[in-house]
Picture 1: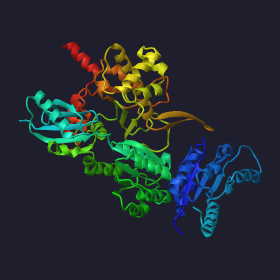
Picture 2 (picture 1 turned 90 degrees about the vertical axis):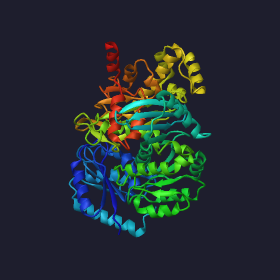
Picture 3 (picture 1 turned 60 degrees about the vertical axis):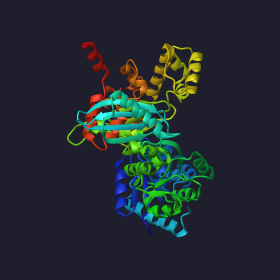
Length: 144
Length: 470
């Protein structure tokens, strides 16, 4: 299996970089090629980076409660850019206030994300998801 | 006897010469002839040499005879990348940094129509980028395949995804193609020097011949680079100095010409204010921008369009109808010099608009972004607010009665606090059009070139105080 490339970043006007950086370091250590866009990243920059680097997955962080607004239309942007099969994860403090996780998860899955990570999700869980999802894509053959 | 050097600019309108005393580091004299590249370049060269000989009372023996050229349309390039804001942007910077004029830029897959257009515009060089190393390879291979099959005859430089460089080179086997390092090996990492060097060597080895400049080969040792690249080398030398000699540090050069306005900056452009966050691609430290719609003659109408007719008319103290009539005449008669106060006022208003807009486009911007943690200042592009020197070159500045005042429009404006233009630079004027000559000379005798530049760039304020004391 060739090395997989993953784009990470914190979307929108969000400066909370620490969790995203820890995740990126862990992924790199696990053998992935990381393209870390850092804080304050507009949605379109994730897409541009994924095109140029031929990425296999985009992991979006949002910690400041505006995730629902910032991530709306993210899948559509991917489709528009020819990345309709891109593996998309989102994680962090995705909404303001206390809502049952199932509700929050549904909002983001409906938006077109393949997985949504609840607050407190361990790095190991993300690694497992990636292995499983990328493995599956490898098996069925990633369309161009 | 002192050693001398001859610095030649094969321009689009004139063949210009500067003779320099290498030991005393002074300009000996200048000569000028017409540009005759379309017929026989030696005619203009001989006329310029005769002119120089008359002024000097005979020609010295030259130790170096170096030339730059912007004749025959300059170095016309097409840049191709994958994402417009990423590899295409890097390719554009490489081409502009090599002194080229971009005649076409293409992102993503070339279509048959794009290709037909490229063949039609007959560029001198095509620069093909796309994909980080190990990133997307499909699009650049598609594009290399299209170019390889096309009727295009010019040299191609491949500066894209390294992993498929061999494959792409094979697709371009029937062309004059060469491979150099990727302009963006990792996302967000610029690597434009190798592409710049490759463009420079193709220019020297092929373009000089293709444009017929080498017919005058008996009169020079080498044509080293396109003229805009020579100005850029001059700017780099003045900013950075050379071994054992300090330069002036961060600087900006602005050059309003007949067809375009060029701006060069030599500065990191990192935020000068603590706490400001830099966004976007890191920009080249030595950066050149070319404003194709801001030219004092060929694009006078475009300047008026960019700045707004009302504001240019008010600045020139003309009615809008009179402004449009005069601008129409300028575009038809591109070699005209201002004749009478009305035309002088118009020229100055056009120059002010071109300088202001070109500098605004070259410099970065800072914007306030509201986050959950409060407002954050985010910067796009280069912060040149702390640049210590601003050099004005080109005829319209050199011949102006008050160039300090003219250039002040390019500076930081409190009405536009987000535009990171120089705040309080020392203004220097290139009255004797010495920058290109210093850039050429820097390639062989950097120390002499530096001293020559520092000795011939004048601060208008110091000049006027000098005049008063005389």
